[in-house]
Length: 102
Image 1 (cartoon, helix red, strand yellow):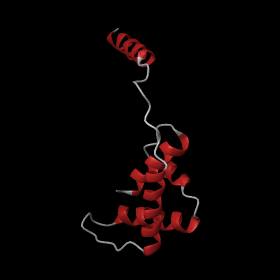
Image 2: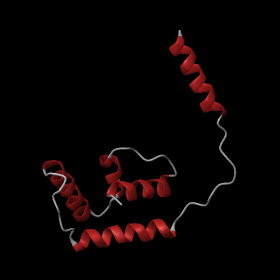
Image 3: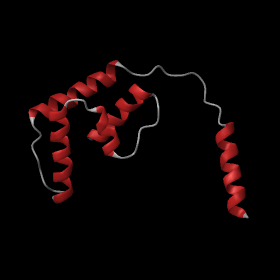
Image 4: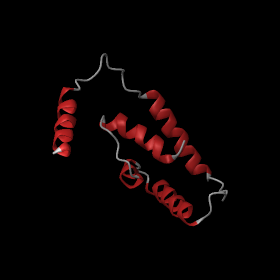
């Protein structure tokens, strides 16, 4: 699981909203600056090397990832019964399509 995925899961748990799609905004969830810096360094490294580049992840980052998995597993949101009301969204899309057709 990439850091973006577990950060997105953590975002949902903490904020109960749709997580942002960019890693930069998700990184604000990491409060430990040394870990945040190491992950940012890995992101920069990934941007500059070939896909087949192999990197050994430091134990600190492994421990951080494991702690995130434990947090997510222990703090799952309760499943909500039923489906949300889709009426506002349906109305919006119908309006959008009507404007597009004109």
